[in-house]
Image 1 (tube, rainbow, N blue to C red):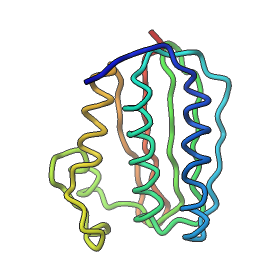
Image 2 (cartoon, helix red, strand yellow):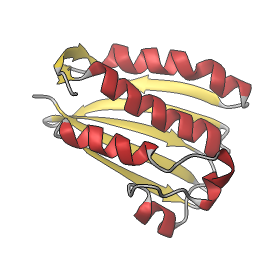
Image 3 (cartoon, one colour):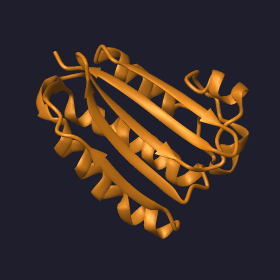
Image 4 (tube, rainbow, N blue to C red):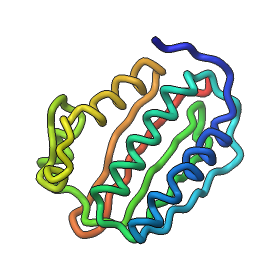
Amino acid sequence: TITKKKENLSALLHDVVDFETESAIDRGIALSANIGKLPIVSIDKNRITQVIINLLNNSIKHSNASKISVEAEKKGTHVEIRIKDNGQGLPKDSVDRLFTPFFVSQESTESGGAGLGIYICKGLIDVHGGKIWVESKVGKGTTFFISLPMK
């Protein structure tokens, strides 16, 4: 169930980064936040928190990154959130299938995941009227983008 209320997205993102910092440090990853002043948005706080935690956890566990940043800013009528790492990146065939159910990339097969996390994230962003996509380059890193409407 999605229950939207007006929420402070800046505070939500900072809280998630604070929550995940220890996990990142344990893996030798520098986790940072570059979150501009964001407008109050109508979202289901628990579901958006779930999405951000899932994407951050995936990056921490699977990217082999030394740096991960969470960035957010207002862009026109939307707020754009980026979770960016400097890890090994994903091959194009993995990027093309990432949002399909039960897809587990070769880079993530050791985790034993079911391949549903990112698929569920997409569904949660869709019901918020937003968009989620990924850009990745092998050897350069991966960035997940989330665009949420401000209204």
